[in-house]
Length: 315
Image (cartoon, rainbow, N blue to C red; front, side, top):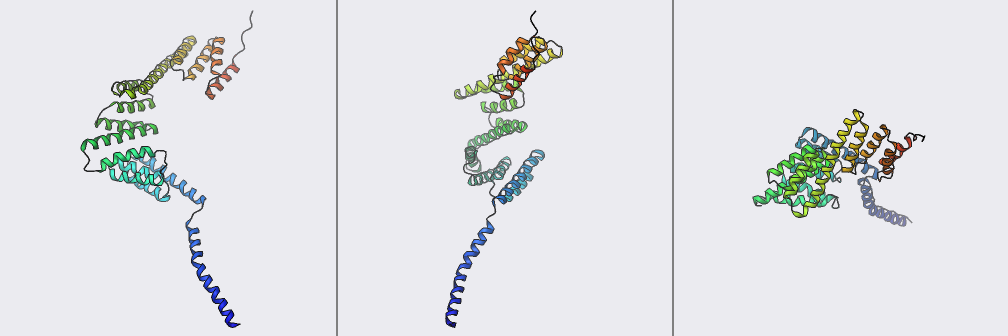
């Protein structure tokens, strides 16, 4: 009996010994795997740190301090790819081509399907050229110019128009061309300097390849129409102040004809006609705008129609 008990105890001990490493491994794995809530909190904290690093960089223009702050954001959540792209851009701005290339490669390794992956791949090609001391000087110049133009376009999309113009000017210093004028025009449009944008687009059209000219002409015509409508709208403001309501309405209608997308001008013209007592003309315009594809314009036109004074009774 004693021998049986001893054998049983020994078997139990052996089974426990065999199971203990597996249990310990499962416990360790459970301890290493954070919960979804913890991962979300970590990502949120890293995103906030990255936003702060970006804001400080815009404010202080200190690339080294921005890089340190961005590294701290990356350390909070190493699976977050965005800080790596920022570190690449900061390295690029300092002329550290090899560093920029390395950070972009790490970014793509974390997020191969990133929406900007094609753009990053193109940048990597240019960075590869710049990081290669044996690359021909002309190839290095062209690669540097393309990187600057790409940065200028990004700054335009971000609304950092001063930075965009600086990058475009640096690119022009490495070789002027229609593409520089196109980027400058985009920045000028965002800044509301439409007449200057038209001039830049005229220069771009004159020098661009034939395949690029239709899109540039379309952009140029749009800018010209918008500039003309803005001038007409400004003229109508003066007429309104002078209580010349008919003149104001006509100026607004002319501006709207030049740029039909600016339906707000039609609403303003209808209001001017109402002030002049020309209810039928206002109704005609508002009925048209009531069917606008823009919900805000359609709603405003319907509201104005509902508030129009009743027509005067016929004698």
